[in-house]
Length: 142
Length: 120
Image (cartoon, rainbow over the protein chains, first blue to last red):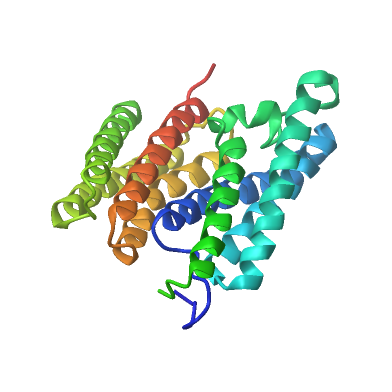
């Protein structure tokens, strides 16, 4: 919507669904982090800090997707990769050392609490962002 | 009352998800009838917000806390309309997919709302 002529529009077709899911995850993760950090941070500082990181990543990716353009596309791609690494690391960490996490994070058990959306989303995101570049290269120019 | 509403909203949301999922499958954008369906689901969610707040004001307590309960009520109210507006901007099958995803999110929120309200 904010994209001007000649820039890569990322919110079209499957991108719309992607932006919706990222938007939902952003709202969910941000509100959850604010609430937990404000009320009971001491109970599980590591878990809540990691949730906050996840929230920032989701919000940033949502913003770049909506903004569109080549720079935003690259930034989103980097963030999706970081997100995937984050989900896999935190997911494995929570399984290997549950005692470090008195409470769940957004990325615990590979996003089990969010019907595995956290692990599926970055994969879909990377696919979509790479595909968007490919369509520009072909020069369809739409 | 709240329990019945939670079930009603969940069933309506899943029906909407199936309907819009079907539109996606048939390669169609959302149409007027879909928007009427979204309006019905949203209306149910709005009634749920009102009933929920009335219950709280009567002194009943949500098991996991008032803040979380109200936040989920508002989230449930916004989910389908937000997806609906996005499907207005995306006049293709993917707009239908977005609304279907929104309705599924609403159904999940309803399950959480039930947990948040109920002791146990």
